[in-house]
Image 1 (tube, one colour):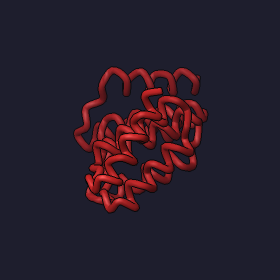
Image 2: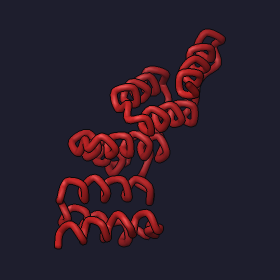
Image 3: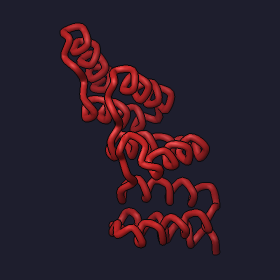
Image 4: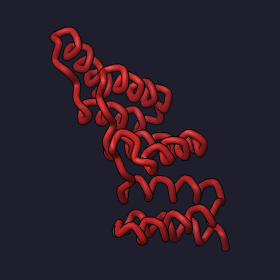
Length: 143
């Protein structure tokens, strides 16, 4: 499997004293998330911190999306609050907001989805088609 190869390359990088960067870790987090392996995505997140690498918007978005795919609202919300506070210098982007709108939609929490939709626009983050579809899905479920 490609993801197993990616993990293998990560281990080789470490043995050759090649420092994995944010993009390396983000790719691993995203890959695990796509296969529904949230625990492995969280493990990659922890390794990123252990490697002394600060997560950026891509890393946060990848892990939040992994949480959304597993309907883990608590973990997604916790990560979103981290990025929203500016921890590690990262800020939410359209992808991050879209993932949170989606998890709120899945959880039947339209008020929270609407609040994030409005916040995103107030911050000058332009919703894309995916964000719009997530928001419309939340509105549809709310009735």
